[in-house]
Length: 261
Image 1 (tube, rainbow, N blue to C red):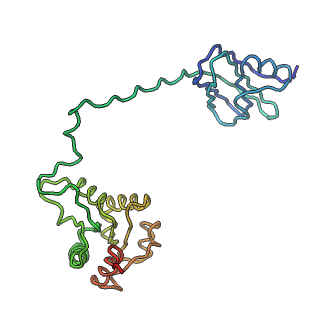
Image 2: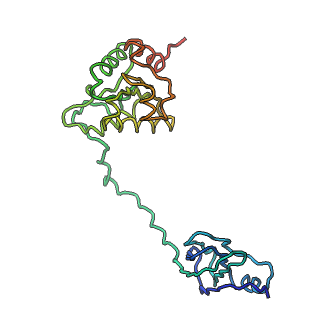
Image 3: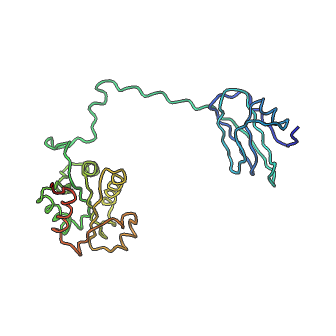
């Protein structure tokens, strides 16, 4: 005999995929075994089990195959005793496969139904300009005009939104169909909700490689940007305190539409 004192739980016949849940008051050695390995364990022989030394409760063990199963719990090598309980959760029933929709049942559903039938749903833009409304007249609008003058297509809210439009849907479409996201960081930008929503979308697409962020700092310091969005403070940016709108537009255009040799 092995001489190990242990508590045994006879779980009876279990199906593969069932889950054995062991609850402990302190750490213990847990073994899930079939009858042959239980006998080997009792005799002090080599045996196979699922489990091990556990110091967190409850502890869950998946049943690997159909059959009769047992759980043993001991505190050999540990200082304190433990109280335990064991429960069994049946296998989870898989959800039925989704059937294909019947013809015409979902064909009329679209992400957006624009009120103006002349809007091109396949339209794309080179640049999406994210900004606070306070910076529209001084930075966003002049920058958009300067970019358009050199052939860069620009998504700017005032030129893309029409009465009756869904603001969120329009912004989402502009973000999804623009190759570059120009973000005008300012104190007003970080104080507004919609610019933060746009920034989240631009960062997500940037991380996935779908869009490139082009930051512009307007009347804000590096420390202020660091306090608001430290992950973007090291991005190469242009400041309106050091460059004119025309110079910034020219540099953006060179990145967005580099000259062909």
